[in-house]
Image (cartoon, rainbow, N blue to C red):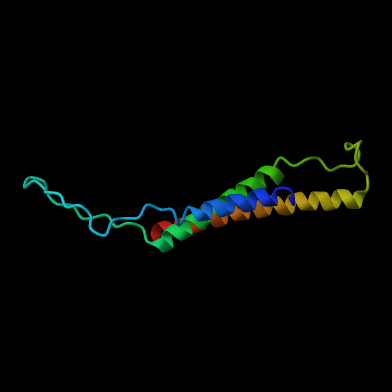
Length: 125
């Protein structure tokens, strides 16, 4: 995981930097003449900065979770000592490796679920 940490950090910073690069709206929008035959519609409000921030954080967390699941997620390798001929048959080392795969795959799935909740909150906030 340590070799992917700089890449994940850079991608998270780039995703968070896009929050500040949103298109700024003009203070005085241009006025248009509405024909008398067309009924005026209510204006659609733009999302608040709070919901944009929640959405961007959710997207970043979801991306990191997807990367973690891609690296350590299912299908997981077989950790039986008989089939790993080139590696150590030390049972304790194999058990630690199996445990690391299980924990990181569950962590990645948790990040994806948390990103879903954040983006859903941003949508209805």
